[in-house]
Length: 248
Length: 262
Image (cartoon, rainbow over all chains, first blue to last red; front, side, top):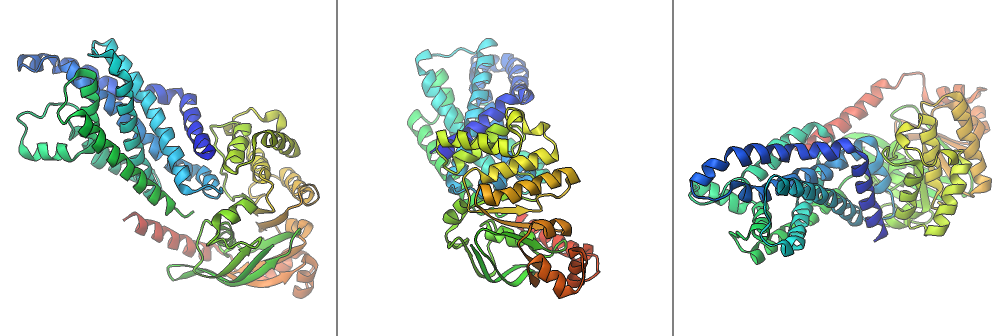
């Protein structure tokens, strides 16, 4: 337990000590929120969808979590290059505990990041329907964060350096975000796109968060929670398996 | 303390360590010498559970590094060839993290961190970030860290590589004191011969993955019929520069990396 805690704490310390990282990772979601939210707002309204910002905000919060959690997960690559990884690998601690500490640490960092994006959303006009449900929303955000941090750690366990990073970014992380229900509703979409979105686990996280915050569910609360939970557990399993294969 | 029989490691068809056998008695300072790419680090990696051997048996304080990883990991401390500290943490935090990972209980942990940081003369810098440390300070901190959980064996892989003579001298004086103060067996690799001559009780010389000589520094010199250990070393391992050998290894490792990525 304490090994998990100390690795979790390390991630948080590193995060809070790097102010540029704290501010830098808000930039991207902020841009999406302002440009898309206000840019497409009028069209969306005319088409009878209501407030686009209300629809978009949970997607942008999830986006903030997605990117920051994957990055945190991929810190393993840096640790490998700067040598710290060896220190944890020769310690008498099971690889599962190490990976769990790292995933939880990365997920917590991402959750904090998500909360900051959430705050910005409310500042620019996003309204939460039922304030009481915010703790439930936080649970969903944390689950999304665990899911994404596990993806990051799994990838980082396989990659040996940062050269493959661009590849992962463009062919995994970006599609995960764009082919989800983050930016647009599913009504009237081509069948193939609908199918992809349904197969994307992140969609269920976004749907759950959006449902809790604005009362607009597509798949339903229980189903979202179930899918996201199961996928997270599976990915943590895959991540720790891949991590256990690392030899230095 | 350490027993190795017919230890072998192949990377593809390159044999990095070839049927190596040696043993290290308890409480001595054991030097493992060899030119670049001779198999020193590969041997340490296998002894310290991070690399699986292709064949052969090992015993570290009575435990098998392949099948009893946790038991083995508790018995040793290691200073790697390259730094392995977290630069974004302070010296104290690096020590603390290590202590928690190794399950050293809190009051004792603090006391030992203080003692060891004083031992390597870093106590007054304990709150500084490691990224501001010089190479020598980092190495000293790593030695202190490796001793925190009271290991029975200390592995040092090229502990003085790239350091100035003053720092090297300093580090060896710590290591010589270790035996009396901390009661550990020391296993180190180096290719600075005069250092090995000065500190080691026993030496083994490895070349092309094979042990070519074993014994006290004195006996090695007698064996090679030369005076400085450096000359004995060259007499034993030949004059050829080892860039060629090393790059074969590197190419093999690189090949493996590319393979694994696919």
